Image (cartoon, rainbow, N blue to C red):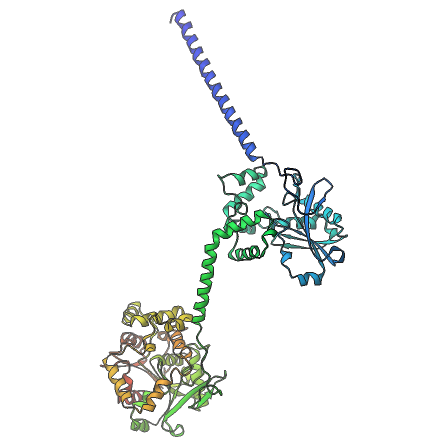
Length: 634
């Protein structure tokens, strides 16, 4: 390259570099200016406005007495209680965050108690609050000495009491640290906690901190780590300010809101001097009024539901104002009575002694061995039969603690009280069958034999196959399905459910059992051939003491949670010195035979009898009692 061109190229390159440097410098200057402008704006935004001067021509009026501290500041206060000269105790109260000397819980104390105790109370505005001058140099320590100077200025004596609520509690901690020799006592009420106190376990502080509102967590962090940013942080619309400052209603529970609303409602408008407190609280109340109303409505509704779920007490038997006792009764160990009637041959000459347990919504009078069994067969076999009222039915006392297990020991006590001997037979029809299962589980050593007739099934026994139970359950009346669900899952609602006219009650309770043609034929013939007086006794006895202790508790126990499954039972007669029989009608619509067949297959020691064309009530058909007794006893 010629020398001239080389010089020209170098000059051009130098010019380009100079321009680039010049542009870079301009950009740096612009950035510096922008940063400076932003910093100035941020600094101004972080600077709080100067406080308003009390007592100046343009400042707020001073409405309360004030004392002057050593550094020239003033503390405002109000007094109440007994006169200072007559007081036995003198107390300084320190208010909470965003409050003042006028928000003092001791004002609500009983005047009689205040007089009796002789308490003088002085409530102060903390520095910067209310009419007390700010303290730019305020620390936790300085607050204690402010309190000490106040006590001296007011001549409270060598010792006095202090009390602080919420953030006012920090002042009490300070007093306990720096002027304990001046204190007669101290109380901290819901004192605020500093989550950075080093002796607090981290697991507890983290858990407690996590329960705060997120906006309060952030405010606490700023106040702790960047205190010079606190004012800016809580006054910018970009951030959620401290919940108390912006009146967030979520900081107060429903209980708090109720207390605060009552407090404000009881105050004279002229007494509500702390406008910040009033405004913040009004905002919170307004924004949560719907929640309060919903809570009140829910409480009223819950109370109504609770009252309706409470059954009436059972009617008392044998008292001067109660129902007469018409049958013999035995007294059990816990003081309850079991009513019974006897039939068959006399007990003293009987070869066999049998306890019969009735079905759902029936009584001791619903006994097929007394109603439809041939007297000649009973005489021939030599059978003595005692038929009982189950607890809560007929004239037997209710058992509020009744379980599937307890009824077995009731039967055992009946046998002992009636001197039936070391062994006896039991028979149960429909829901009475659960009593027989209980006897086979808990007192098998007392049994000579047992028979279950159309026995009820609990669809929640865990050994029953789900396909069988689902199929059998689906064949029940819809209203019965619902009643059984309630009895199993929500037993405390059983009475309420079955006594609401707008809910589907258990069909038998409405007098509409799921009878098929065979049952209708048997029941019609049974009651049609009865003496009207006898029929009336049978119909009136079951719920003699009321519905709950009889039919509703029966649902709860029968379809509730059993502590054993019958399919887990072992043969009670391994030496063939007794037998267990299960009788079913193949057209039973109340208790499906499919489940009974499965139980009989699993428990091979049970002798299963299925009556062709038989419904649920087949045992009351003429001649059936004869067959059942013969199979059991011979």
